[in-house]
Amino acid sequence: MREIMSIGRSAAIRGWAVAIALLFANGLAAEEAEKGGISSYHIVGYVADASPLPPINAHKLDVINYAFGTIDDKGDIVLKSPVATSSLATLTALRKVNPQLKVVLSVGGWTAGHFSEAALTDDARQRFAEDAAKLLEQHDLDGLDIDWEYPTLPGGGISHRPEDKRNFSLLLETARARLDQLGKAHGGRHYVLTIAAADSEFVAGIELERAARSLDWINLMTYDFHNSLTPTTGHHAGLYPSALDPAGDRAADKAVRQFMDAGVPARKLILGVPFYGRAFTGVDPAHDGLQQKYAKFSGAPSWRDLVANYIDKNGYTRHWDAKAQVPYLWNPATRTFVSYDDPQSLRIKMAYVKTQGLGGVMYWEQSLDSNEQLIDVLVDALHVGAHPVRDQASKASTP
Image 1 (cartoon, one colour):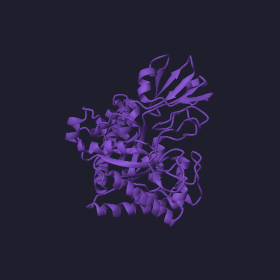
Image 2 (cartoon, one colour):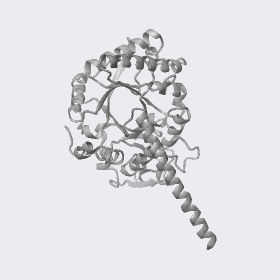
Image 3 (tube, one colour):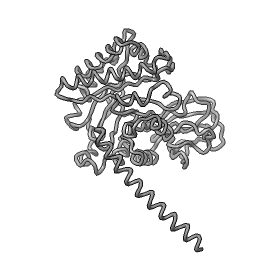
Image 4 (tube, helix red, strand yellow):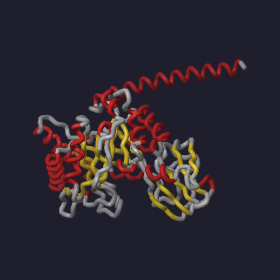
């Protein structure tokens, strides 16, 4: 009994030490964030162009990434949507409600090509930067997000070459210089420059530490870890690897570690979360379908659809993976497995953002939420108590 009590006291002491260390670390992280120009934590939401746009509460976001601009075969940045101009005007008008809101043009996306050519030469890079500056000025935007999926890799069938790795850094440096020049012409306004980036082998085509020097932050796409391209089911946005995954495959924490180990400051990392799931059918039934072979990838149900038709409905039962810290659904009758994020897993991820000193959270995509259920989890976890005006107005949706 004495030994047990002694162990208990030692454990308690270690617990207090860890708690004090975390408080100290969080204080340093907050201080470092302020030095880097980050106020508290960013909530970055991608908004895909649509007519009409989904409801957006301007008080609940810090940054809207308008998706997407693309690069045409002539090397020009173009807005293909016929309603792009009106959509951007609607989004920038939200700054009347929240003057701190930033509206950023995101260029790229899956299957968006011609980045390799746009980054290939000094002239091409300067042309890209000039196009970006013109669009930001024309639409009164606050910055540029580059979603090149992925330098040196074919991605969704895009052009690619080994030189992309260095050229990507040069493209960012050229864009940064042009945006700084544009800012000086507009009274010292700071235009943000960010990228969307994946982990694992996808970072092999990026000079992470060098690229980060040009960037305000990196939107980490810490989702789609299991999808139609993977041989088994699994968590598409696990915080940690599942115990059933012997290889300890991709997970959000592993991605964060990979970027920080490469020299990217924690404050420049924005953790990505999905507002949609990944569904598989014809799944082997062991372990309720988790980490099993499947016959068919059956889609990406939105959180709105998951709430209405899946979670503990129509034969689907919710399960929780205590190791990966995310939920999943299993339907034994249809042998369907669904991976997704929910309020419980998002609260855990937001606690992770704080303990790791990250810059905030990014989500895909605004229209997929259900009555702002998931957005409210992010706001409550990261901003309540930090922004009194936001707190007072955050429950009133802005059309």
